[in-house]
Every structure is written in C-alpha cells, then in structure tokens.
Length: 381
Image 1 (cartoon, rainbow, N blue to C red):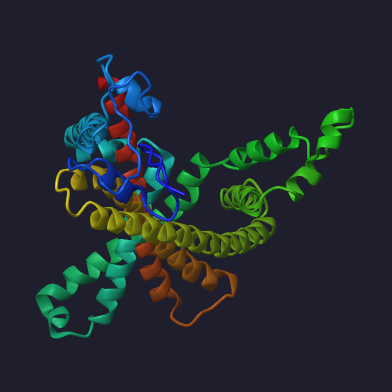
Image 2 (image 1 turned 180 degrees about the horizontal axis):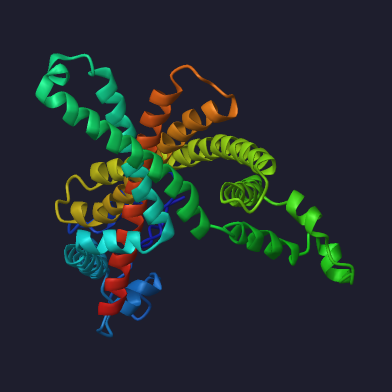
C-alpha cells in the first residue's frame, strides 16, 4: 500500500530533525507517492503555530530557517533579560564597599563574637609560636629579651580578657537564642499530625513535650544547646551556682558535638545532590554543544543559561566545602572538651579555633555582602 506523507507528521522510527530536513528541502521530493498543492482550497493540516505565524491568507509551508529565526528571537529576549540582570548584579557588587560589609557584620552580636574569636585565637597561635622559638638566639639577646617578655605578658593578659569577654559579653547578647528553635517547635505544634486529627478537630491540644520529641533532630539539638549555653553563661556571671553551670556546660558541649556530627552528615548529603546536579548540567551542556556544533549562533545562547546554573551550583558546592571544613574544625575542638583530652590540647584547640573563626567569618562576610547587593538591586529597580 502506498504511503502518504503529510507535513510535520513524521512516521515512527526516524528522528524529527531528519524528517524536517527531508521535507523542507527545496528540491522536489520524488520519494513521496502523493503530494498536495499548498495553494489549494484544502491545504494540508499543520500545527497552529505555523498558521498563526503566517500573516498572509494563502498557505505557505513553514521553513526550517523561519523556525530557527523564531526560536533565536525568543532566546534573544531571554538573553537580554539575563544580561541586564547580570549587569545589575555586577554594578551592585561594585557599589558595595568592604567597609560597609564589615560595618553590617559588627552591628550584629554574631559578627562581634566572630571578631573577638579571631583576635583571641590569633593571639593564642602567636603565643604558641613564640613559645616554640623562645630558645632562639634572637629572643635570648639582652636588648630584645625584656621587650619580648613584656609583649608575651601583655598578649597573655589580652587573650585571657578576650576569653572572658567572649564568654560574658557576647553570650549575654546571645541570651534567649533558644527562642528561634522554640518558634519552629511551636509552629509544628499547631500543625495536625494526621488527616484524622484535622478532621475531628479535637479540642485537646498536643503537648509541648510530644511536639518537641517529634521535632527534627537539628532543631531539637539547637534548642537544648541554646538553653544549656544560657545556663552555663549565667553561672559564669554568678547568677547560678557553679555546679549547675558546669553540668550545663558539659551538656552544651555534648549537644554541640552531636549537632556537629549531624551537620557533617547533612553537608555530605547536600554535596551529593549538588554534585549530581552539576553532572546533569554538564552533560546537558555537552549534548547541546554536540547538537548545535554546526550552528555557531545558537550554541552560546542556549548554553548561557546552563553556564549560569553551573556557576551557581559550583558556588554552592564551594560554600558547602567551607562549611564542611568549619564543622570538622569544630568537631576536633569540641572533642577535646567532651572527652577531656589533655595531650596537645592547647595547640590543637588554638589552631582549630582560629581556622573555625576564619571560615565562619568568611561565611558571615559573604552573607552580609549578598544582603547588601540584594538591597541595592531592589532599591534601584
């Protein structure tokens, strides 16, 4: 039986691109057993997009070049929006000064705590370095001996003062930090756990203890850690007995230790997701580059959005790696407190504390920078 070929209705077993190339060739197709006159009163059926795109009343077969031009125009519009957005972001990043970012950081108690931590552990690392080279000839010189001894004495006093400041002043400003996880727990308490409870609308409310035990582990750990930390801080300030404060401090360290382990597990899961998304985007970019290899115009336009997505995923993966390194430093630091390790405690805790302070400060700096950039973009738009 002779087959009938209709426009844009390819038969199975062949790709659509192959059919488009064969049908829209300028030469007369002698392989088809039947062709209809496109100028007849009953033209062949075509998709609505082809009919709408034609401005004349007479039927014109859609050409592949026309379709490419239409798709390129659509991409050009999106590309213009994309370029404008990139320009706004770059302009806002140039307008944001480093001094403004540091000022915004120091306006928060968390930023001031990071500054104290950087200074404190920098001094501790310097004192460790000074103690390791204390037997050198330079430090034994008569002229520099007294000056170095006075410097070490002043720095030791400064480190002790900063240690008390970090344990007292910022902790006082961070009191009642457990209100944030408490809000999350109370929000879950108002949500019914099943459709049956929502349908019956029982007047008996869910107990807080039941809701807290069913809360996500990170939220529950954060709540208990913040409460124990406040009790330990009040004990250091003399409001609560020292025995209760020491017990609360140990409990807070255990919460910190467990929450750090949970954070490392969550970080590993997030990194696996980001890595799989990166592989997916890179594979799509490779396929697009191979498919559009012959078309030099469409290749950069199609891949620009994938390049933006890949850059975003790479940035997320970078900060996930920074978070993982910070959590590793915290885990080493708190392990000495939880397990009461003594060997090399001063050196290891000083180094890990400084590394954790640098990494956490970098994360906080980037957070405030992005906030200022978004504020400038929203104000200018």
